[in-house]
Amino acid sequence: MITAIQEVTGRIAPPDEKATLRAVLRLNSLTKPPGSLGRLEALAVRLAGISKVEQPCYSKRTVVVMAADHGVCCEGVSAFPQEVTMQMAYNFLSGGAAVNVLARQGGAEVQFVDIGINGDITHPQLIDRKVRRGTDNMAAGPAMSRDDALRAILAGVQVAQEAVKNGTEIFITGEMGIGNTTASAAVLCALEGIPPETAAGRGTGIDDERLRHKISVIERALQVNTPNPADPIDVLSKVGGLEIAGLAGLILGAAALRIPVILDGFISGAAALVAKALAPESTAYMIASHVSGEQGHKLMLDRLGLEALLDLGLRLGEGTGGALCLHFIEAVCRIMREMATFESAGVSGSESV
Image (cartoon, rainbow, N blue to C red; front, side, top):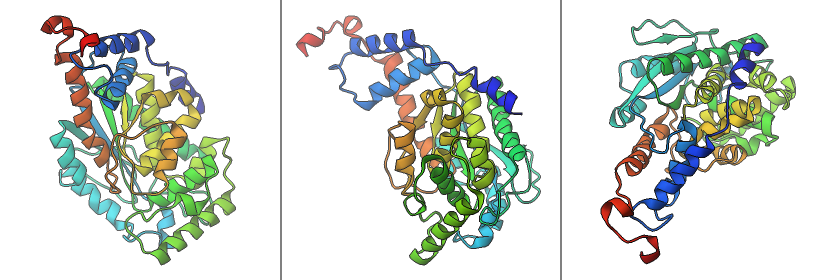
């Protein structure tokens, strides 16, 4: 399985320099002062390099919501019981979750993937890629086996490949899983050497006492498992989650196919750190949508070398922040395609602006 993952990562190429240059030249020819659209211009240049065209268009947009359960929930780290993962699954599948609403507004499809829910779901819209029924309690031993982690990554790669085959041109990462901020914080600690008290946040809205307990659970998980920071699969298997692994695979699969990936929040950030550890060049295909209300998220983005487009205090997950950023993507694409140049509009060049 590791060979299959290496085959995918080996296909990740750097952004196209010629398309990047053409995008810069076009931006400078548009009827505006150079650089006056700020970070939208930087986004336009990045998208051109990813997609190899200076005027990209992303008509088919897909939010992939990976869902899984976490054995660490038995430690009382969340304000909600584990059963909520299963209950929310049906809400996603019926179109009633927040990300469904925001995806509809942004013209995106939501694909819901069961990669590790602790129960059985039957629904015509479900994508079943279940690796196992949730993880084990990472505070008492490894969350899963190394093979489970590899299978979950490959499941994410396959979801990306199938979606692109069916026309997807841009991805948004989403997730659902009670307890997954605990696993994501542990992944951040293990991969980047961040202390648990800095990495852990309030997740579903826990109080100070439970936050202190959550930090102690993460500390115990790291002590019990001693994950190897030089081996991202070891980190995933010992303190990660199935949806984190699946999203890492989605990112790698998309990057190998030159498809941009809009990252959502904290859990997506953990997946992105794993993807980066497996293939550093994959960060070129990641777009950070927002800074989460989870305190460790800004650290994740710093380590990824990404700057978020929004800071709205969001901490819902699901892909909500990523779906909101589709409006910026659409704006950038329309500017590159529809805005007049100085020459076409008969306006004097930038030296007179």
